Image 1 (tube, rainbow, N blue to C red):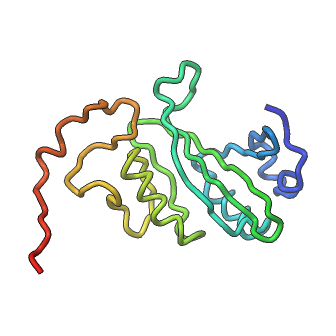
Image 2 (image 1 turned 180 degrees about the vertical axis):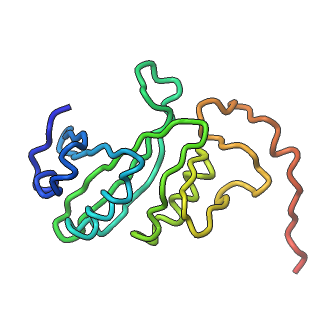
Length: 167
């Protein structure tokens, strides 16, 4: 990867100079270690104006031949004044993939982190309400992990049936 010669990368404090950065088709990206994630996200928001967390998702690299890590979190940030976008990537591994929650920085991270927890099993330490958002509470797996069987494990057959109240 090559260094990015953008305003964002030039404006990062010197202590972030070691972050791996690249640009592809005009899309700027930086890779941040999990132990520095919140520090970097806070700087991007408070000092560089990335005031919008547009999206947060995860990629499971289990079946990728050359992957060095199991999971990759992808934070899509936007500066609403300059219309600049920045992708922040953070790689994690099993058995307990965990990063600090971004909810204190962006309230919108609440549902996004819950979705990533629900479907991939990534824990967000300090999240105010980390519980399932799409699947029932009794569901024990995380179905977007590559090692989850396509036909499921039968969990849906063991869940209680919830019926609509007569009204």
